[in-house]
Each structure stands twice: as C-alpha cells, then as structure tokens.
Image (tube, rainbow, N blue to C red; front, side):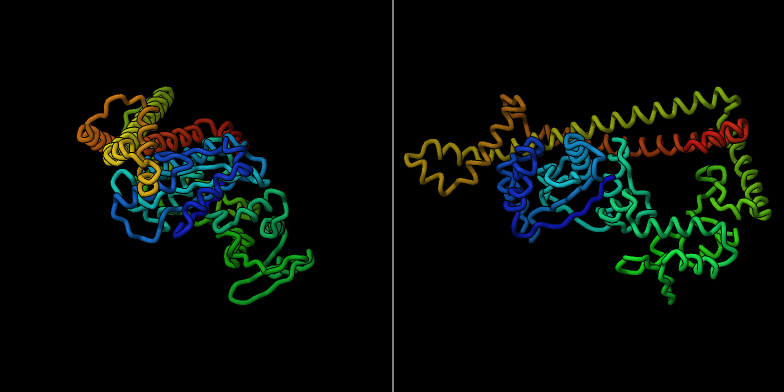
Length: 444
C-alpha cells in the first residue's frame, strides 16, 4: 500500500530538488530519474517554461510524496511505481524529477514537478478532485504490482502511521473494531455490549457520539470514525440482526447487480425475515440475468464463456493501443520542447562561441547557455540530426490527442461491457453450480 500527500513549492525550488537528490538518501543517485529536464538543471528548465508561459504566480512547482508500507516492496520496484504514477498523473506535459529514498524503514518516493506545462503552458490546478485522482491512480498501480491498497471508505482519513500500526497489530482502532465484532453475536442489547467492553478495560464517554478509550490510549475514539457499520445506530441494528450495509443504488437498466451478499452477522443469517428478503432479491437478479442472455442472443454456457473472453481480449487490445498512443504523445511533446528551446537559444549560444571574452559573456547569459546545451544533448540522445518541422509535429500531436480521446471512450465502454459480462457469468455460475460458487466465495 502507498500513502500519498502533496504540497506546493513557493520559494525554495532548487533547495527542494537538491534535498530529494541527496546521494545518501537515493543510493548514490541510482534511484533518481527525470522527465523533460536534467537532474542537475531542473530548476533552470522549470523557470524557462514558466517564463515562456508568462506565468507570474507564486507556485514554482509541486512536491508529491508516495510512501510504502515497511517491507512490502523493493527500492527498484518503488521507483518504477513512482515513474508510472508520474506518467499517469502528469501525462507527459510537465517536467519532473523523481527520487526514491531508502534512508528510513519505509521506502518513499519524492516527485517534484513544474507548476506549468511545457506543452500548452497551462498551470497545474491542485484541488480535491486532482488529489483524489492521484490517490486512485497510486492505488491502481500498487494493485497491479501486487501491493496492498486501502479500501475506499474503510480506511478513509487513515494516516500512514496508523495503517502501519494496524498491520503490526498495535492499532487502537483495529482492536476496538475486533472487540465490537466479537461481542455483537454474543450480546442481547447495546447496554450489554457497553458493559462487556468496560469489563475488557475500555473507558466509555457518551454524548452526541459515543467514544471509547483503551488502557494506555491517549485520546478517545469515536465509533463513527471506524466506518458506517460502527455508528451507534448501526451497532444496535447489527445486534438485532436487521442491519443492511448501505451501498450506492445501481439502476437495473444500466448494470446487472451481483447476487446479494448476506450480512456477515450470525443473528442476521438466522433471521427468517432477512432470508425471505434475500430470496426475493436473488430471484429478481436471476430474472435480470436471463433477460440479459436473451437480449444478447446467448444460448449456451460455452457461448457465454466465449463472449466473456472476447470482451476481455477487446478491452486489453484497446488498453494497449491507448498506452502506445500516450507514449507517442509524450515523446512528441518532449521533442517539441527541446526543438523550441534549441531554436530560441541558438543565437545566444552562437554569440557566446564568437565572443572574445567568453567568461564575461557567460556571466550574463549562464542560464541560457545551460539550457541550450541541455537541449542539444537531449536531441543528440534522441538521434535527431536534422531538426523536424515544428508545425508538422504539432499537427501530429493534435491528431494523436484526438485518437487518445476516442480510445479512452472505447476503453471505458469495453471495461463496462467486461464488468457486465463478468457479473452475468457469476450469476449464472451461482444458479447452475451453487456448491462450486459458494466454495469459490469462501476461498476469496
């Protein structure tokens, strides 16, 4: 699992970049990478882009930190995850420097990126929506690498220290949740639950929200912060066996829902009324599944499996095309930046080479000379011998962006279709092979 946080850099850009590039923290800079700029010239290149954009704002860049659980990954994999995150979040439009620090028990990435895009000179807007996108993207990439992720809602507001404590079995919140879960099937009412918790050493504070404090715990813990199933009302419902987890309602005409999950409570499972409700819901979803099969002309189980495989394969092909397109867009953006810098500063560099007093000329144009040499180096590494036409590059860039937009829509539709077929197949399996389906669910 990775925890992310971000903040703006307003006045100490070079100092911040120097800090994250510390050789003692980055294994001699082996765990340091950059995009659109050099490691040693990043602050100058950031400033050049902001100047070209006419930006007079106070934000010079942003600093994103991605921390990993102790022992869950290697430095090399953590760095790779950081690069994937930077690529997905910044889209090849912002210069950045990424380093992985190994000087603490938990590995963590530092990503510093420019406040302005070198492609379209638009500012990066940081808000709740952009941060949630970073968090979701980080979780997705971690999951793809086999790392644990925070379940949305379950660990909302949980700090890295608290997550680590829970993993190690020392979290007060985790212990309180375990105590409540253990007692609910054993008690007859809420008062008995409180009494049993007191016997276990918990101090109770009642008010608008009920709170508990274990021996040695500094502050009280409100049960409502443990999750929706731990509010006072929810606990009382769970004791009575009538609690139903609140989920977002899905319209039947948009997506077929999964076969109902019975509430994980002994008393709920023993409730005749609840069993009757579950049976009705299962019948409704069985009917919806049959309608789906009829509408899509699927007449056999083998045909359903083939259709599921075909939809999954189409989704994979679309995703690969999307990634190839995004990579080409990033390559073109970077090439365009280097060509533009090279052409604008070539006259300055030529005057420097022709100058009789090079040291004096350099003192007045040091930043421009550094930027020109960096651009020339980058073009040489790209094996560019003759500068391409910028107008042609921009035309291809726009065309690829249009293609990317269409591929995104195709991929979204493919994923939606794949999920629908997956749900239908699970429903069919639960109807045709109930014992096997239950066994698979228990394994999960």
